[in-house]
Length: 362
Ligand code: ATP
Ligand code: MG
Ligand code: FE
Image (cartoon, rainbow, N blue to C red; front, side):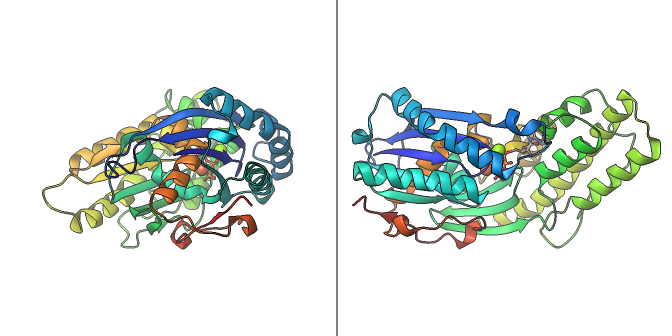
């Protein structure tokens, strides 16, 4: 099977062709190949505004998408005739971008007479570890991005149980807001990490939100407020002050995250065969953070979990994961009719993804 994937849910315009060989011969062994993975980031368009501006994003998707799709086909060395289906992100995300991606996918599918698969963006993140590492179900997923902070038990295609979510800010959002209040450039996360490398993580005793709580969820807005108060109290800030705040913030985040994730590891372990090694997968842009990566790695080692962190380019928003989710859907016979009528959904929780959504291209 070959699927063309399209991703436009936020500030990346992306297209990709992914192939799966011999699925029918040995369905238990997946051997996918990413034939192309083209990503155009709009970071520069949004930098001046310190965040993603939906109207600018939608316009940029319109301008770029046709060329990105062409590039993805060309890189893969295929034409539309060689592709078995088109998969496009249909939600959740910024509705302007979703409309651009899904409409374009519908037009391509209709013109080429191919099936269209409407993919949930979060399902793409959730299944990436099977594309990169051939991971078997079930596994535990920690998704930490600009828009989401969730722990999900991934038990099969379409079988997702959300065990925890943030009750206020997403973790990437907290990084971005802290960067903004410290006048660090957009995007915030990488710049906070860079500053933290020169800082003292023990200078500020920031709160570890939810630590020790019996409730499984995350919270980051109190931590963000504590950072704001500390920064205001010692303003004007020297470069060293900024570095110390970043390092202390990052330490608090890593500590809070470890507490929340460990709770989920124990719960997952309890329902898992004793003799087998369970796995934790991390996805989303925040997974790029070294301190967080190392914390999670250690946590997994201590708890007998395999730690799976797909390459950064496949952890952040991309279309290979969307093409792959399309292949998984086709493979599991969980692609049903209706995608041509599918209306993009800005809100579409992963555990509301059940039996989707393919339409014939006629
Ligand atoms: P979503 O996928 O939830 O729709 P998104 O497109 O914003 O949202 P990603 O592109 O996966 O998500 O990740 C971007 C987020 O990751 C931003 O909030 C960014 O600040 C954060 N981030 C990136 N690199 C780092 C880092 N090194 N440390 C911390 N945060 C980071
Ligand atoms: Mg993004
Ligand atoms: Fe994403």
